Image (cartoon, rainbow, N blue to C red; front, top):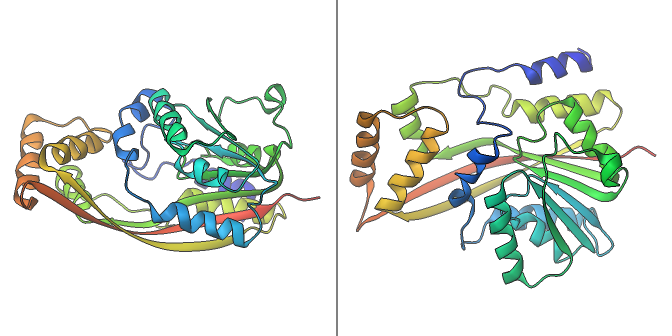
Length: 276
C-alpha cells in the first residue's frame, strides 16, 4: 500500500452520516452551545501536560491551533507558550473565544476568522512560522493536502488528535432510535489512521499516544431537549414525531428536572517532527 491508497481511503465516505457539515460556518455557529461551558475539561489538561513533558510546548513556543472553537486549548497553551494563534471558520465560536480570552487575562493570544482549507500560508507569512501546529477534532484537516499544510506551517512539530472511541449514554441511544443502526468507523478514526500512514510513508515517522477520558454533563430538561435535538438535526431533518420522541425520552431520563449524560472516550493523538 502506498500514499495514494491512504489518500483515496481518506476521501471515501463510508456512510451518509459519517461527516458533519464540514466547512459550513453557519452549522458550527449553531453548535456553539455544545462547546461553551464553565466546567473543566480533562482533555485539555491531559494534552497540555503531555506536550510540556515532551518539550513540544515551552516558554519559547509559537503555536497555531487549527479549528480552535471557543479557544480553550489555545488559552491553555498560552499559559506556557510565547505566542498562540487560534483560527476558526465560525464567528460565534470566535466570539466565545474572545470572551474566554478576556476572562483568562492573557495578552499573547490572537483569534482569527480563517478557513484552514482556503488559507494561503505564503500570503499570511505562515510558511515555517510556528514551532507547534495543532488540530483537535477539527474537520479542517480532512485530506492529505491539509495534513501537509500543517507541516508546511511548522518549524518543528505538529499534533493531530481525534476520538478513537466515544460512548455517550444518552446521545448514542437517541442516534440509534432516530438514525437507526449505522456503521461505526472500523479504523477507530479513519482520518487519523490515514494521516499516520501518509506521514509514515513520507518518512516523518509519527508517534501515537492515546488518552482515556470520562465526563459527566448535566443539563436542565429544556436545555437537554434543545441540545440533543440540535445535535441530531446536524445529521437529519427531524419530523414532529421524532422531536416528540426526543422530548419524551429525555423527560423519562430526567431526575429532579436534570438530565445527566456519562461520556467515556479514547482520544488518539499523532505527533511528528518536521524533517531537517
